[in-house]
Image (cartoon, rainbow, N blue to C red):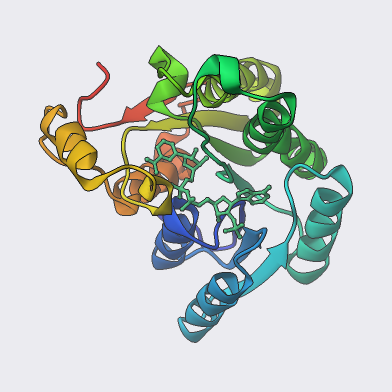
Length: 248
Ligand code: NAP
């Protein structure tokens, strides 16, 4: 894989899977990397410094992906610094747990807007350049729960299923413009998102996984990079499960 000459924008890159994607793109030669973040400014700036020390043009930019105005400002700043975005990784996301009957309207909107509307807003900003250049790659991060549904995570599952529908429809629309759109559906991955899952439940999840372990951010980041690479040039509209066999 060789991303020389490419500018990559990753949402939710301050921590977890998004941060590891930034490091993986850097390891594979990306020219410029935009670290999208919301609240974790210190972590985003530390990652920016790490990437710069490694000789990569990196910039941490704050934007709540639920806000059209903030997303537009992030793309304007990225464009001014590094030129158009060639690769967009829609990774920012939140999970919430609870019985369906207890989900309030505000929490429903928070999950849907962060996990799904944010992708719509980022794609809208990235696409004009990608379409006119007839070159671009987008990877959207869904979840295996978007494929099969999770009890007590109805809003999360619904938002992640929407990501799959968005990916497939957009891939069909953008194929003639040579813009590829794919989706990664992670299984259980060791990040801060698991903080609310008790250690014994995490052990059970690992035991229920055919490959007998939880996933790492690196498992996802390598897949994301592959889907954006020239080597995946005939792959679009696909949902790649990276879940150790948990969902087959
Ligand atoms: P994480 O460690 O909790 O990180 C979440 C990231 O999303 C953070 O960088 C956070 O930014 C960002 N974010 C949250 N709300 C945002 C908003 N409104 N605007 C902009 N950025 C926002 O989670 P993760 O495990 O790396 O998850 C990354 C993606 O993978 C998510 O879409 C998640 O649903 C998906 N996924 C994770 C797992 C898993 O087991 N970990 C499984 C399947 C799918 P700040 O910290 O700066 O606020």
